[in-house]
Amino acid sequence: MHRKATSPGFNEKNNALVFKESIAQAQGMISHWMGDNEKTSATLKRIPEDTMRVALHIISAMGFGVRLLWPGDKLKEGGDQDGLIYLGDEPSEGHTMSFQNALATVLDNIFVILLTPRLLLSKLPSSQYIDHY
Image 1 (spheres, rainbow, N blue to C red):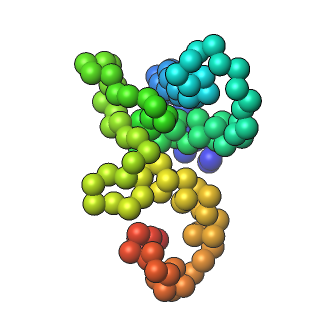
Image 2 (cartoon, rainbow, N blue to C red; image 1 turned 60 degrees about the horizontal axis):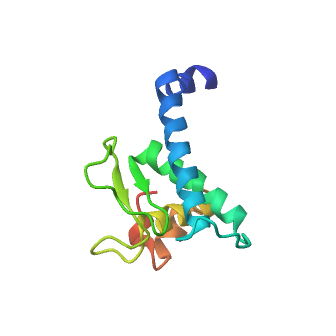
């Protein structure tokens, strides 16, 4: 049953899109690591966080249609945007948390959110953001 329910999402077209996004995000991570000077040989101290960020960026683009940019990345004018919304690290107007931080917070706490009774979630100060559970 599981295979029958999930197989429509795993096709050649979607695999190609995930592969293309994976390449774009890996290039963004390497550019972030290299900084302004491409000949830099600085020590990388955040490899696990950065690889997790690559996965988060791919999930965001493929699942929500939001391409997250790496620090220092700029949206290219007139470039191929693939119908995705582009967001950086800064919160959108009227929000206190960026989309990336919100998604990371939910994913970091997904088990707590799913296992906590709805009544207790409604008592949390941030219940306005998670009351749809």
